[in-house]
Image (cartoon, rainbow, N blue to C red; front, side):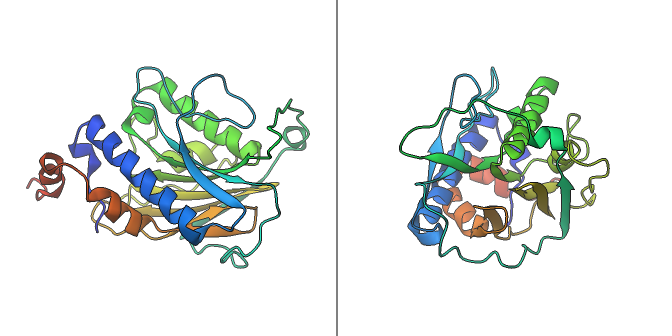
Length: 254
């Protein structure tokens, strides 16, 4: 199924689909894609930022539901793929400043060991609606990587005034002075980040009308599972109300 132009519909219509798509991705991951010691669940998190709890929620914006991947504490085993890096068209890596790596943080952990390993985020219009919202999103994405949380970010909205070169450039600019820009005819972004001592980005530019490829969700700095974005997108789209399907599927204006 081709990617739709979600700028055509209301923020509420996107958030309705957002919830359905997140649920389909969760189901796919928990139905055998993740190794046995891992599980994924959609969480709406509120409250102060903590070392194991990151929220991308903004004031006056519908709360995002982020998909978190946890491990029960065992070492990963039986992970499908990952001996070879993902084959995205744009890749980058950056070494961390020693002072950043040595920064001490007070961490409170639950005795069960349900620690966060990775975050999957679907960018919403609200994340780009104001300068503060964009800055907060980028800062928390960067903080996630500094803390060692792997990321998969899916942005089906074109660059705007707050991210004129795209969401990846906004994030990766905190690590490198020369992040690659998106091709002008591919303004949407699928970006996977490995959060080891050397941060690595695997970026696939895309566009409305294209089908999505599977994207890696890292579980360790070198190992990952591929998230079936196309099949889960199609499954989530089945429940979109007819009123909005007609808008999304209408031919583009001449």
